[in-house]
Amino acid sequence: MNFYIETFGCQMNKSRSEHLAYLLSQNGFQPARNKEEADILLFNTCAVREHASEKAISNIQKISLERTTGFYRPLLVVLGCYSEYVKKRVEKRLPGVDIIIGTHNLESLPELIKKNLETHRKLIAFSETPPGPFDEKGFLRTPGVTAYLPITYGCNNFCSYCVVPYTTGRQRSRPLPSLIDELQLIVEEGFREIMLLGQNVNSYGMDLDGGLTFEGLLQIIEHTMGNEKLWIRFLTSHPRDMNRSIIERVKGSSILCPYFHLPLQSGSDTILHSMNRGYTQEHYLNMVSQIREIIPEAGIGTDLIVGYPGETKNDFQETLRVAEAAQFDIAYTYCYSHRPNTQASLMNDEIPITIKKERLRILNEMIHIIHSHKMNRLLGQGTTVLIDEKTSLSFSGKTPSNLRVSLPPQSILNPGQFVPVQLTSIQAGKLWGEVIERES
Ligand code: SAM
Ligand code: SF4
Figure 1 (cartoon, rainbow, N blue to C red):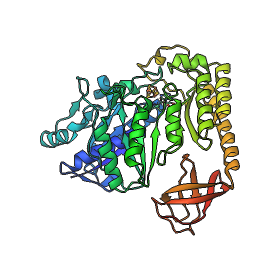
Figure 2: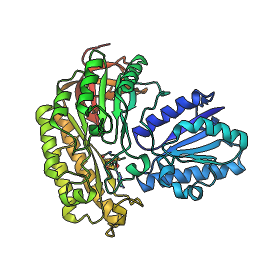
Figure 3: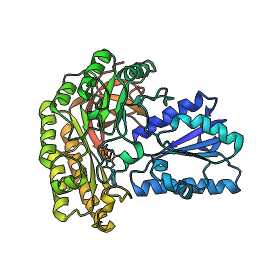
Figure 4: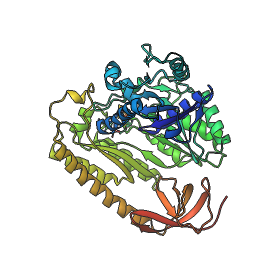
């Protein structure tokens, strides 16, 4: 039998799907080329924002209804953050699904599928005991340029608006020896870029014996992999736990890329306090100044939420002010989404959707202007690009600072190549470059 996994949400989920694919392939199931050919259809879900997660769930419900009438009758499996989030109401929310699994039971997936195939009974599995150490082994990675490697799973921060600590549990760090083994395996598999993942990578090791910190981990990775032709990135950094020594470690490194994903969320101290983020705008801007002072060419990315309960016009102006001062290279912007059971969901002063959307529009406009000015200032400069996409019209790849650059098709390039590039123009909002000389 063959299977297809549809993944929603973050890179962490994508990586977990690669682990699930490995578990299934070790148990006699084959990956299907597409959804339509699959005997088993799995949905690895997300619950972070209401609109996206409800859209995904109504699509799953539609497939389960069509199944009763049509010829396409795959076995349906729903797992991951959404199932964990609605665990008490799961029967009601996912009535036509054959197997539902929480976030801490993934290893039981092959066994549950076999059991369902034998008994044709609906199976629901959630773990009642706290999960053991986080040490997922085996990933059926999609061949390509970039490999994901989660270094922690879960989160202890309980930001007031966020479901992640409830859906993934407390932070668990992957022990160092298996992390190094996995890094070496990734290199042997031919990947050129490794993305170290965690909800707050800066707190790596806090839950392990031995006192290893994130900076210590970077030092060990640098020491072990420093001679490889490889780029290593990490995300997400929490502004509260980011520090000068991590920035300096990146500066001195031959493989660590100078890109920091540092979600600000809001520029208002009142809102930051209510969000339980643990820093002020002053601390945040100080961190940004340190990055720019130590690594002037570094990229800084962020996440921003508008319309958090009680956000006044002044609070929003503060977000605009801090975003302007920080001159972000990349920004993911969201309207606040009400998530039942979080601390923020208990607050009464929800902002009307029209105001949220208007604030999002204003913020996006400003981010776009900052981005355009920054791109213009880069024209004429040289950089290195790791090619990761190839179409009939162009190649594209990323710079160490995480900027996407397109290259004309006349260059003969292949994904996985590092090429020296001069940035030459901006077309339809995209940065274009030309290869200066070929490298292998
Ligand atoms: N751990 C990361 C951090 O602390 O920045 C972020 C993880 S979260 C899955 C990704 C982003 O989703 C957050 O940075 C936040 O901007 C956004 N997000 C989370 N909950 C949200 C909510 N209830 N409404 C809108 N955006 C939300
Ligand atoms: Fe959610 Fe905050 Fe944890 Fe990020 S740090 S996952 S926003 S609780």
